[in-house]
Length: 476
Image 1 (spheres, rainbow, N blue to C red):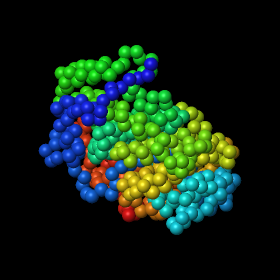
Image 2: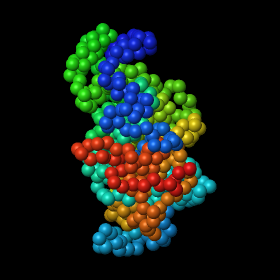
Image 3: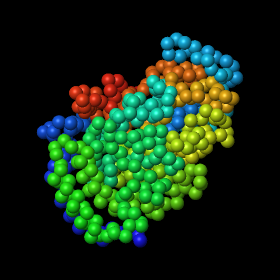
Image 4: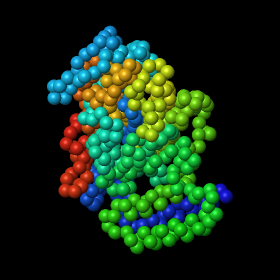
């Protein structure tokens, strides 16, 4: 039996939803009106300055993408491949390392900016004039879960709000029919930390990310009744919602963010029953658009579909889309953790192939539609890789330096900030961390990261903790 939904007009549908709960409605009005000065404690302020962007797409390359084989060209490394070098690490000790491993990929300069990119990423190489590169990113950890948590929340330990939750808290919603913060996991599986990768932490529960998995039979779990349900009908759904409304009204207490979020989620879920199928229906997309994202090729279409859906989500008002490339459950063949081999034909090449065209297609499509002017695209990974070999053809974890890039609203394309040492082993000049990238992101969205905080356990907590500076060289 197919799941049934009430056959209502949009006006009737909206009328039913209008009978929400007073306190939740008030909170929503305060949120959407820009956080009035009389808003209750815990409500963020109005934007501190004129924003340059209003939405974000975060692209996370899970596993530690090798900067030595993508964007960080080092002639010294290429010339001295096979030689032994002692690297100084934290505390002045010497790292015992294998011989230098020159990149097996050909390097070439691209665009008017002359950015070096290997031929492992030929499509992204055509977009470099729209991208701003952070060439000396640093992480205090080389462990996957901690590194992923650091780049998504600003802390190496779990439990803190992710960037998407902070954006949701600060900016509120642009649409009533879709979540403010959506996470698109890799079709092959979830990240290292599972669904905690889009947690709201200690922020009100309504700011947690909503997982949308287009590769699953049910892209949004429990949005529709199970196919084998024989009891779901328009009448039963109406009666069930009415009963839930009555029970929730009776139990709602001021400050109970979990119940408020649950109430809001039921109301949003009803609206999403119409909105989500429309977002996922790609029949209206042209053949040229689908080809741009890599449709028609089994290697590129899965991630290409998620990238196209990310564009459709921001097009329809979703504030923050977190898109994952790589899974913590699929081994080296399903992420960027390429210990064994970074040569042509390896898992590293497979990750490059499956992401290169879809992400380049996303940038080009956003730009062609005028969406890139108001959307920040952020590409990152949890840490980099070593310039010396692990085994004979792979690279080990390296938090000392890696590369991230940003593009879109308010970003000066074609720019480069920071530099690693001559081997791309550690950051050497204008070092940046996730704090600086997050501070820059919030600045583009209209917020001073030092003034955006939430009171928790007696402390004014920030996305950037007590760190971070806006990277002004990246601003247009």
